[in-house]
Amino acid sequence: MNIKVIIDFEIIGNYKKDKKEFYENMEILKKISQIYQTDLFISSNDIKIFKSLNVNNINIYLKETQKNEDYLVKVSEKYDWVLYFKSGTKEVLCEGNIIYSPIKLKGNIDNFKNISFTEHAKNKKYYHDFSNYYMETLANDTPKEAQFLIDIFKKYINKDNGKVIDCCCGVGRHAYLLAKDGFKVTGIDISSDQITNAEKIHNHSNIDYKIMDIRDFDLVDKDYEMSYCMWTTYNYLSLDKDLKKFIKTNYNHQKKGSILILDSKNIPRLDAHRMYHRYTEKDKFKMDILINKYVFNNIQNSQYFLFINDNGYKKFFYDDEFVRFYTINELKKIIDGCYEIIDIYGNFDMEKYNDKTSNRFITVLKRI
Image 1 (cartoon, one colour):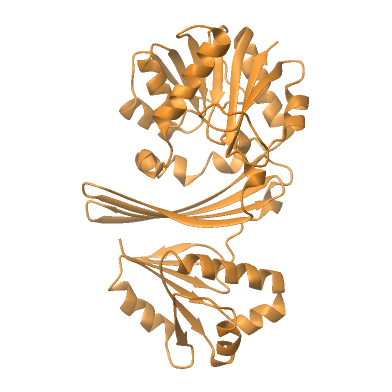
Image 2 (image 1 turned 90 degrees about the horizontal axis):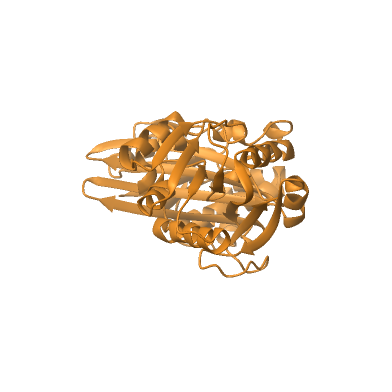
């Protein structure tokens, strides 16, 4: 899939206005030019300062000699997609195969002063409009993750199978493999589209899918032996009170000695800014995902640009999200009276967690 990036950037003006934002924009320019062919529109006054920044893989066009809109139309005829970053653009818009985007990609954390990140996540296109393509987007090792859950169950429950709850089950990728191994699984997700696709592609007689909120679900059975929430999903519960409700709800559905597994990325060890892409091609389906992530303190903010060609039909999706990382001490306070932490793993190979080097932060909680 051919993608061209064009950046319209007032270098000197931006530098004088906000130096921090200027360097953030330059970081985006450097990173994205390592991924896609990139053109830069600048004024002749900006040439000298730009060349001093040692940014490679970029074609320079002077604004004085090039009409941007005419150039965009010409380029759009040669490429599958054109991603056009321009100063002053307020939101991501798609017109034909041209995507207009702000240079500044960070979401506004101020929108969540008094509400949970969940209120944003439950309406994400990724879990609704894009749900049909969910499995194609994953770079995860689902069999390995499912085997980890099975091994945890055997280690702490000392049984080969039992009754489990898959919290935020998505399209049921873990639930299905556990069900095939003999577990009785109840899969819960707040997205009706995810549950619809779970029933379509991961249906099994041992699974019962439910459209529910993990903070206050109510099931008939109250004797589950294990619950789990995988892949940095419980981290949408950014308010302490939300996570407490989730913990208490699981507590009310489990018997003493049962296990609750909370899995997330080890966010504090990640780079402050990452940008990368994933390309998938299968039969007549092609997809390129540009992913941009920021980490500040215990928060990760992500943006996703999804370029799709499905049997000749082009689609574009844009989504963003916030997640919160919980420290060990924060978790201990929130689970107090319901669970205790009995183990912490740093990956799905069951290696012990190291806050400086581990890729993941996987806590195993035991109901008291």
